Amino acid sequence: MSEHDPLRFASDLSAKLATRSRHVCAFLGAGVARACGLPDIAQLQQRVLSGLKSKEQSDAFARQLEGRNLEQALSRLRRIAALLTGDQLIDDLTSKQATALDNAVCQAIVSELNIKADTNLVPVDRFAAWAGRARYRLPVEIFTVNYDLLLETALERRRVPYFDGFVGTLRASFHTDLVEGATGADQECMPAFFVRLWKLHGSVNWAWEDQQIMRLGQPVNEGLAAAIYPSDTKYEESRRVPFVVLQDRLRRSLQQSETMVIIAGYSFSDEHLNELLFDAAARRERSEFLTFCHSNIPDVLSSRALTTPNLQVVSGDEAILGGIRAQWKAPSEPVPNLWEDGKLALCDFQNLAAYLARSTAREAEGEANVA
Image (cartoon, rainbow, N blue to C red; front, side, top):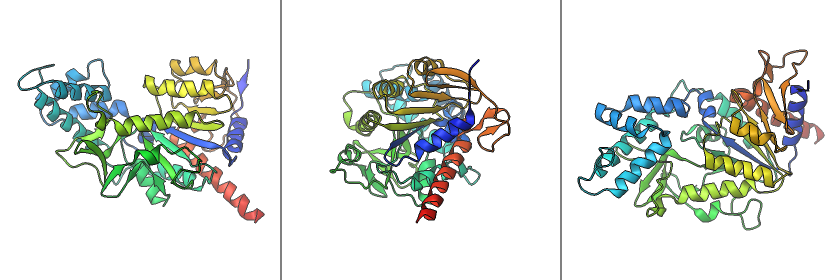
């Protein structure tokens, strides 16, 4: 019976991350927020539902959540608001009531994702330290489906310069031309040492103003709907611009040759994003897609990984490496942050971030000694 060696896996990962000519991307999901003490998407949905101020709104949103997730329910509310006039009803909601419920849900999301004094910033702080010290020839690109401000907070605490597609401070506007610049191309305006932060599903500090999305200097105030996930009404394309442009950026970044993609905290519940990742892995054989699963490996992921050797998947108990699924071989001695309690510890984002931060520290020390 074959087994995978966790120490060899970690050593190989460190060697790959040390290759400065690589294009490195990180794709982060709600597991990152959970590692910092904020709710993941399932917890957020329940807290939002229980946090709505009136029973009428709570019951109305519960109906929208039947057979849908949080983002799908928001999109449906926006379709209802756009389609109806006057006293017309869909799901017992008028256009005005759907808009009010949308605003209330967004405010509940903002409140639940607020960074508090007891929020554990250590994982994202270490991740930001890695991103700031990586010094690859091409910029590090961070894609996230999270709405919170954990990454922005950590990057600023570490004084890591980053670009998120918006230009400005208090009321920043989105610049499509800067986002669409080809990575590493001569015409790209932003220097490579600027980390790219792409928030695919919006943010608690994005707001709709005058038919466009603006990034504010703080989470949106009460009375405004945060720009969380795009409405899919075709006749409001101006509201979809950041989301469409950022997803296209993801597609083009993944298709770049010899790219290394680190995927953490993502549940593979978004079919569209899944296909972008799987298609890139199938088309770019010299790229590597490394997925860290906090719990069991999702079936949709394992079926692809078994036939796509460069799509590597690891969980605490087992891994799919090079298309081979096997359990981990326990090392003779536990290694902190790598092998703990009989499992690979890197599947916890806290340990993964610590590993990344240590790897760049060792490389920096080695470069200093050579000098």
